[in-house]
Length: 509
Image 1 (tube, one colour):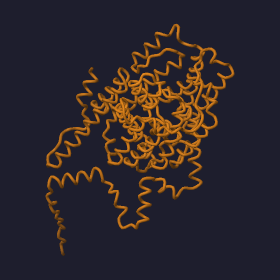
Image 2 (tube, rainbow, N blue to C red):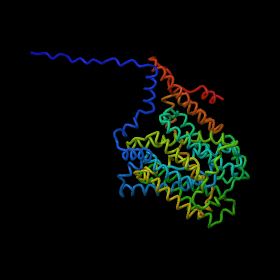
Image 3 (cartoon, one colour):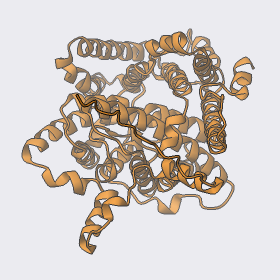
Image 4 (tube, rainbow, N blue to C red):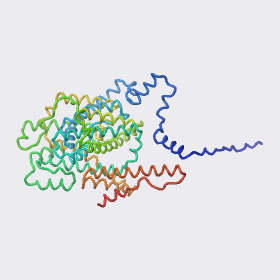
């Protein structure tokens, strides 16, 4: 009987590397782990050109297999999200202290650019509540008179540098950095911003004429209660509350019965149409009901000459743009990865940064302000059966037709209804389940959440952002510490989830 000998595998010791070689290897693993140039190897010139075109414009890749059946799903989804985005845009422009047409311009230009360059099949692009509020708050800190032309120019400047920031991150292949932005701090910022936004809508929901420009909850509630006996308009309250209830009921029905999701999607447009007709017939505007009055008709004018490239507003424009750009990217990544995981496809972080950056740069020279992926529109886009980014193109064309043909019809739309739409949208951003989960799983992350949350509602959006950024900076510093330790063969015991001393200081203060 022959006994088989055991097979012994010998593993050789890897060759010893110098400090520079280890550093070079780590850099390649971080920035070029996907080996982006491998597909160009051994290809002829025309094939390399086509591959390069597909790398910059993914639509040339997936568009080859596009057909009528796929378009049917995208067309229905595009029309559906357009019916949601038009009333939302008119409402969100007020958060940014801009005229309504600028938000509509944004929903026309930026989705077209994203459809050609983005890697997500589901994201619906346009103005969003959080970024609009952040932009409006930071811009008014620099220029209090938001009716002035300088305010508008600063908005375009911030949008330009938001795009430049996003493009730079994409070109340098820094998409991985988004993974290290504290999720807890961002959840806290979004929840705080949502409550701040909702409270600020009480001005138009109650018909208050004189209202504070500050965003902290104490100043807002003081403005509300100080005008209770002489500043509230009951006609406005009836209209606003009636449509607020209508929107909440349709949202509740859609949540309970997923097949009726379209009720919540079309409810904002139905509210705008019905309230506009009601105000026009009853002439409620003569009784103190505030209305939109005028939305400029036509397509985007060129605004390249309006951007500040010198002078005292250049510095604030860069600073505001960088902050708004990072927040917009974080929101877009959170949305994109959520729906990509559901449909089981990959989302390229670097391509997303390039797409978002390019669309905001182009938007800044065509009278748009900062755009990103929208939670509510993307959810409706997904539920409506979208297949590709063509749904963004359909939405864009619908908004264009609205700008050319029907904007004068929104003249009698009551501001109270727009406030109701905003309240319903932003209250959905307060995720109580996630907060409870943070408390159970990680107390340090819960502290980061509370710091950002209270920073926003009791001070300003800037403080909430600062806490999130400090948490982000701590994570990045830990990456470099860990990288150095790995290179030297030692261990790092620095957890990425520790809160920064600055976060704790701001929380206590």
